[in-house]
Image (tube, rainbow, N blue to C red):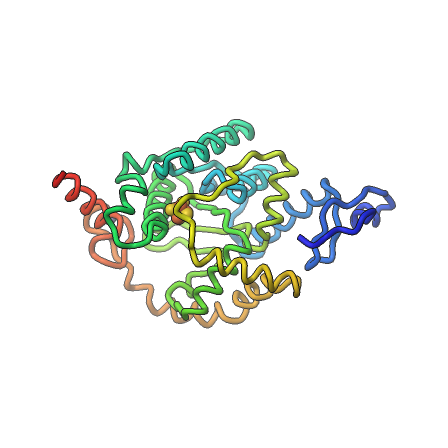
Length: 316
Ligand code: SF4
Ligand code: ZN
């Protein structure tokens, strides 16, 4: 975040004739804000994003994908303060200390805001991530992403929620967009939108923090005294998305607003073109023969993975 000059007053307080000093400076919004007005600004921006993309209303039951990190907890906090019906969903990935620590923080936070946290253990459902990592040749994060999406969708439906909200922020979205553009991954690009509408067994998925930067979300968590897991998952090391994030952040420093423009211009200019292409492909979605969840192939990737895990454990 750009440096704040000593003695700068909060833009909002100043407009009201008050003298509160600013504690953050948001260069691409040309705003210097005190703690109270930063929290207000953050929550207003989340609310505006929810409305802009018609994500959900106060009548919907929302399930927040909680990892124990700053983004998911900041999102859960903001949704609750804005008056939405939001509960949490935590998947215990079985990644040793990382999972133990993040689960503890997620549980403590749920307690603090007085909302339900549903917990699913991957060890009981299929196998923990370190075991899955050993038996597949795909990178751990790719298998992890697949199983997380699968169980989120399955349990959200079973538990009676109509929307899944994830804490992906602007830095995440811009980095993924950058990677997908670099490789012209049309299949991924056409799904990169803040709302994925319900269809063929998938429930609606939304990203209300898509216009909030990582630093803004960390600051919001900090100002609200939210304790979150501060170290990365051991499998995240060397992920190319981290490199893309660094690259975009160095551009952002020289040209504030770059990330937001890159992402929002994609949504405005490129996404409509890709959407048309997507409409033509919708019919290809089937239902998995084993579990009945939506799938592009006869047997979904999680059931295939399950089979693999079972075969291996039978051999041992
Ligand atoms: Fe899963 Fe990879 Fe994230 Fe770790 S870094 S939680 S393995 S997706
Ligand atoms: Zn299946």
